[in-house]
Image (cartoon, rainbow, N blue to C red; front, side, top):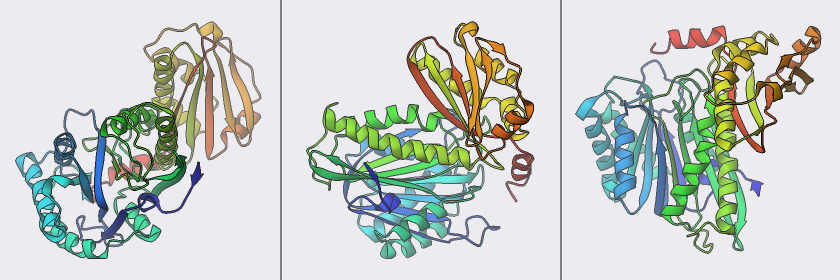
Length: 409
């Protein structure tokens, strides 16, 4: 497997584009409307927010993916979420699909919509329709257009997030490309994140859905910035079979190769979301090792990465490992604390903090040095089995409060 350039445009047949339409009045410096378009019909799978309050694009996309045989395009806006907008929200999605259909010739049920931004305001559909008319004729397969689209879907993100890889499957080069946005309102069971993945693999809808569902469990669902889960969380993958690999219809060696490549794309994007958490100065990676079950490992890792007190301690470079032990203890799983070891690790070193459930005496200056890094790992060895899990998050800073106090302005 190799990393390649191109993001969502790296796989054969996919184009992208973006433009500025002025969805959020205060933002006049970057594009706020993007499109991903495929030259050929795609099988499609998606996972969505678990929040009971679901935005209109989530409802629209689930219906299209469930009922349509193929998908060809996604229209994405930033600035307004098109959430808590009642029937008007669904009409917005229908009008956007109709608008792209008119200029492209696609069926309306081949078109997906996604939105991110402030919950409540009405989406300026007329502006979006004008933007679609600008983007469509300028769609291109270039890495530049892919990057522009990744920038257009950002809200409080500080940089675009893209990954693409190439893997050999049944003698053919198969490419998977992805982009996402997410920085705040990020929590387990996805978050205020949108992620769009493209691939030229030939794979059945059943296997594509299975792969995405399982990969999400160990990637996007293992990220927490602030404990909030959004109304708009969406991960969509489109596969157009242009790589001409032998079609993947079962969990065979080809499926495993595809799954591994998809995991790489999604895990790198998820880690990028955590690293770019609002106001963050440090990426935190929680590794739970040697748990009795995979479910236990995930729950323990999620609990530690979600702890506000742990996040605050990492920001202060305070080696207060009692907060980690507390987070393990309220994770909702049973374990023997007298078997647990805890370490901090970074590029500056590694220090053992807890041995067999007992907090050790340690060198405060050295512990500070280990924590004084832009990436810190919290390692929890449960010594109870063979299952591991990784979760990603970031420190909780003063800047986080400032960003969210001013979010609507």
